[in-house]
Amino acid sequence: MIAARIALWIILQALIVNGLLFFGGAAAPQLHLFPLLLIPLQSNKFVWLGGLATGGLALDIALGTYGLHLLAATILAICLPVIHGAFAPREGYEVSDMGTVFGLGPRWVLLTSFLASWIYCTAVELISASQFHLFGAATLRGLISAVTTALMVVVLQFLLLRRPKRKRN
Amino acid sequence: MRNLVLLAIRNGYVLAVLALLGIGFTMYFTHHGAGRSAFFRQTGSIAGQVQERRADWAVYMDLDEQNERLVGEVSRLRIELLSLQGRAGDARGDRDSTRTGLYNWSVRSGKVVSGPVGSARRLWLAKPGADAGLRRGMGVLWNGYALGVVQDVSDGFSRILPLLHVEGGWSGRLGRDGASGTLSWDGRSSDVMWLGGVPRHVEVVVGDTVFSTGFDGVFPTGIPMGVVEGWTGADVPDFVDVDVRPLVAFDRVRFVHFLEDLRLEEQRDLMDPDANPQTSAQ
Image (cartoon, rainbow over all chains, first blue to last red; front, side, top):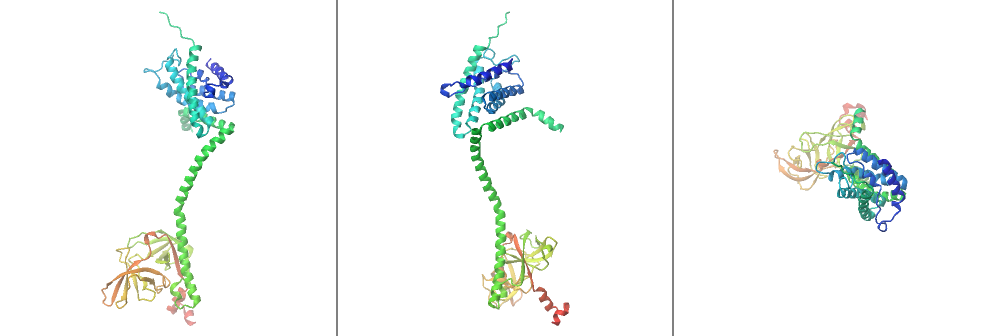
């Protein structure tokens, strides 16, 4: 199910989102991160690494940007456990905890999504720029893309995820 | 092998990350000509600066070797100059030409392996040895100045008795035409040697050079040995001891030249006719 969701969002990203101009081209949101950030928090770090790398590679194949997203996804996979650890509740994550607005709250999702997409987008922009004199503009573009992506992830979670039913006593 | 596998398993995550980064960069630079060229243009300038620094550093580190070669070359040229002076004087018919040259002397280059300075009884070790034709009794020069004599040789090395050795005694002369005496060292200060046996009536001038006499067959005539610093009254009433500062910078000696008198055998035969009756008959 998770794999199918990831594949779907990669197709969406490649066919639709990537062709859209956000803020006159100042931002390039990476919406394929949306399903990737929904991987269960207690998963093994190899699962995160494998999921993100596969997603990045698939997007590379779809867009013809061979290596670009794979590199960014690998860098994100290294950083993601740190991000999750930084925003973990005092007692730690529960096995059933999901990184959703209904599970850990909008604030948690917004912050973790922003940091994750900031790392990812900045990596993509910097690698694409490849020149030192373009790094400033690339960093700014990465920041705007990250903000856009994080906001869209929160909104999408509200729109697409179902609120868990409360148990009746 | 098992440990290697265990190590790989233990660090599997790091290895996986590195592998993915490697694959990513390889794919990116393989498929993106612009990115590749831009990346290498940027890294190329950094690499160029690093290489330049590295080259500068290598040159700096190589200076010692270059300096060594230059010192050896200067030393060789000085010896060559001495030899040419002798030949030129001989060609002019200068009767004193043999006093200032290495005419009829063969010269071989060498290098000091160990040369303790300030030790009263330590001998020096130099290369080469008997394999290169060195033998006992050959004089040793440094930059054209008298340094010592070969005391013994092995196949590859030679042992040198330096001027600064309490057992040494060297035949020296005050100036080119002055009185001769025996130059020796008492083992105290490496700056002062003594030229003994100088008659009291001889005028000793501070600053005069002490040259080799050539009497001992170790050095040719006129090789500079030291500079007169002063003189003191000797125990013997008719003679004085002249203070001589050696010209060799003993702490900087690296390259030396070995001298061989090509007419030494002839001189010995003449001095000792019984050893070679054929020569005496002629």
